Image 1 (cartoon, rainbow, N blue to C red):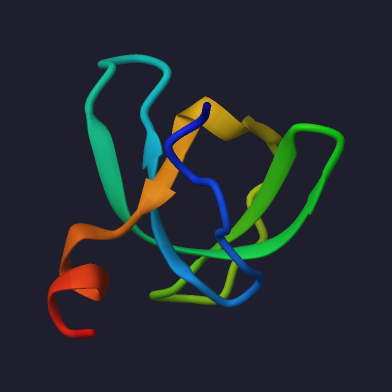
Image 2 (cartoon, helix red, strand yellow):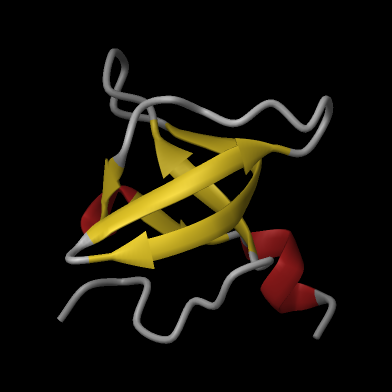
Length: 67
């Protein structure tokens, strides 16, 4: 089971940095399809051209704390 089960469009997420392996904050899910997640950067609204696998995306820790 992936860590992002149930993540909906508009949810604030962290994405796995492919260079360092660390989690990067400040993204929002734009859509999901066939195991691929598309995100945009919150600070400037830029759509990230790279597609992320579901295991490379997780709900932002600060988003879950404020719920």
